[in-house]
Length: 123
Image 1 (cartoon, rainbow, N blue to C red):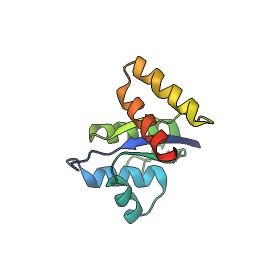
Image 2 (cartoon, rainbow, N blue to C red):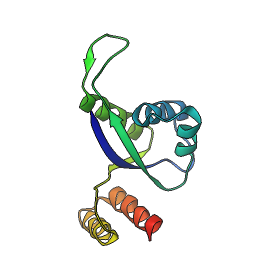
Image 3 (cartoon, one colour):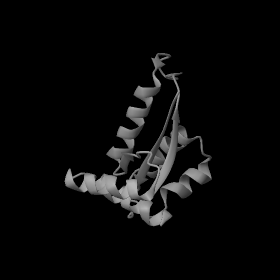
Image 4 (cartoon, rainbow, N blue to C red):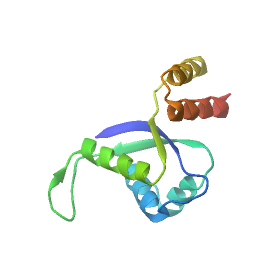
């Protein structure tokens, strides 16, 4: 099983395939329909805990690894305009600020914005 934290920023204009995005969020988080829908409609970056386990594709009866499932799910979210960044587990807000600065220096603007939003939430 894979367990990770991601920051996800859903498009503010909601101009995406909402049904597909909600299905992916539900499968990754185990949330109910209402909770997943509410999460996808929030403004700003959301810190989301994701769990993925080895499974079987219901259409082909072929095994699917947790890693492949996670990669395909994140690719589907990105195709729909959702910004997805793996959250680095840092112990302090100072470490998160440092990570945001480093992301800016590497021109990883999506990651920097997500980390700055996390700092704002917990400051």
